[in-house]
Image 1 (cartoon, one colour):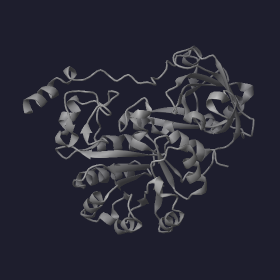
Image 2: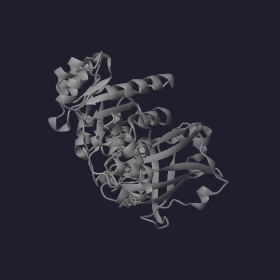
Image 3: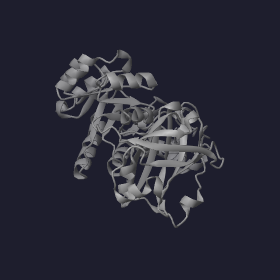
Image 4: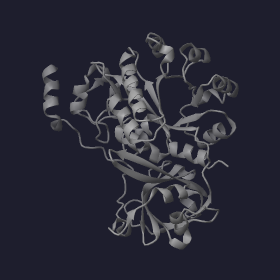
Amino acid sequence: MIFRNLIYLLFPALFTACQKQLAAPLPDLKWDRFDDPGASPLARGPQKAMEGVYAITEGKDLFGEQVVLRWSHLSRGSDTTYFVSIFGEKNIAYFTGEGRSRDGSILLKMYWRTLSNTSTGPCWLSIAADQGADLLFNGDTIEANGITIEGSYAEGEQVPDKRIALRYVRPLHSDTSFSVLAHRGGGRNSDQLPASENSIELIRMAERLGATGIEIDVKLTSDGVPILYHDDDLNPRLVQDAGLHGPIKDYSFAQLDGVVRLVNGEKIPRLDQALKVVIEETDLRYIWLDVKYDGPLEPVRAVQQQAIAMATSAGRDIRILIGLPGDDQLEKFKQLPDHQQIPSLCELSLEDVRSINAQVWAPMWTSGQQDDDVQQMQAEGRKAFVWTMDVPEFIQQYMYNGHFDGILSNYPSLVAYYHYSRE
């Protein structure tokens, strides 16, 4: 066994399976007008000014009556990339891409995806000078019908040739206290996203998918290293076949790092690596560390403590919470020194939440809206999140009629649509 694992570490390429082919591969986004050197990066002012709720005037059959448009960014050292996203209700549709300006117009090169199935394709959009670009560049107040976005889209690898048009209706809902939480870093592997669940690559996408916070799953390796992984075993749902099988807790981080790859080719990340990316590269505000093992919590607490110090030093207002889903994790948490001062999230009873002074109570959505309990928690200065909600009508019901401070979902784009389109 020791010899075999040594060979894996020395020659990982020999044991790495071919990358799994996605059922919803990203389309080719080549667009000569956008890619031409004459097009310039779009300034931050016009980006923020064009955010809002838009009516769809062409393309309703696929994308519905209304969408919301938002910008996000990813920072890599001194380099910041800005992304535009559009979220809709029908077919759980989202668009994401980048923006440029050219000859007085604003250009948006995007791809679209419907999460109700695996449909996807390229989309080219533009705002002409006389359709709102002048207002955006000049910093003027944007009123209803002040912006028209027109363009075309296609399915698969086809050249965009189907008409789509959007008309500005009103600003986004202004409440920034509500949390849109992405499950497993952004969504499940079964949702056929461009990156694997619980990967750094998917965490980097989370805001483009509508998230303001993420839930990630934490396991321990045989040598006590906290990693991001959901299941107990190495299995085809999560990893490519590299010759290692059985419980993930039986392998050291070096063994996993040397040979195992997630289904889309990424490495299994250490928890500290993932939190560093969140702090340095994103604007995510809540990180829910969902503890998926029954062992000691000291390793996770040490990483959490270092990450909180890093965030404080960077001036980031971010909550990094140790999530406790069961009694075993709760008892281990109580063994930590000063556990009542440790930022935590508890999925159990209100009494359990109070016993550890958890910052967040997080019940499962099937227990109902629990308005009285939610308001009790809020009166005590705590937050209440609900998980894991993917059915559109329930998301609407809990958001519009309930009192939760956040919703955890595999479809953060849908939660974002309902939140930002509220009047």
